[in-house]
Length: 99
Ligand SMILES: [Zn+2]
Image (cartoon, rainbow, N blue to C red; front, side):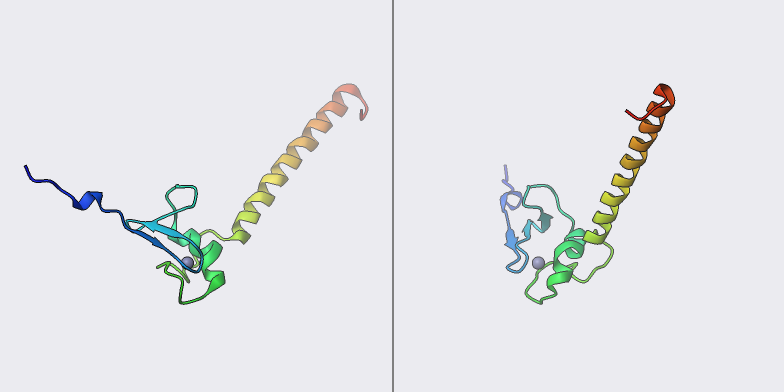
């Protein structure tokens, strides 16, 4: 029986610029989760804009960005605020006054 050793080889590349890690060619977040080169580019690499960065997607604008993430947070906050205001209104209707 022939043994397949190729699957066992583990390549680990770390970007000296942003610290991102690629394991067997797959970008992996520090948490161990599978990463996204595009998101990494939008969040980190595009800002560093340095040729030392090994992210193949550096310069790609389609990934996640902080602006987009803050946008999501703001949208989430607005919906919570709207819900709270609605609850307060319901409360007012039910009890006739603002407690
Ligand atoms: Zn990098």
